[in-house]
Image (cartoon, rainbow, N blue to C red; front, side, top):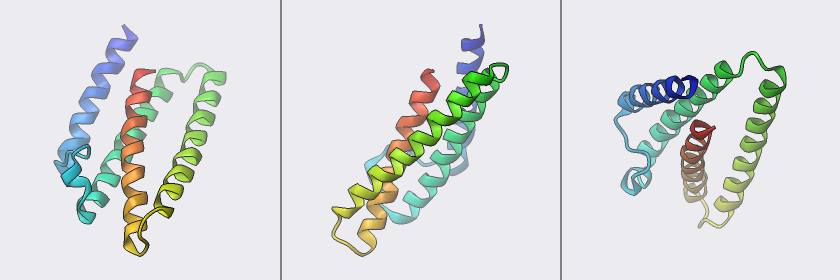
Length: 119
């Protein structure tokens, strides 16, 4: 019952967050334009934060689970940032490095949101 409610709530939240920009942040064409990439970053970050808050609400009565959830997410953020920094080092330089890093963050954040929804 809880999982069904959680899944429904996630679906509703995702629709609201996507409707805000109307961007499909999984689309290669969207991710190739800098202004849309920045909008996607804001959108997917908001979606991930919503999913994380819903997970926290689901496990609010378990102190150990809450602590583990927080530690897990902080660890993921460090890993994501390190991986995207590394990937951007392989770019041609200039603005390309920043765009590569942001694209990496968007793609990894989309994937992370899916992972958290599956928990």
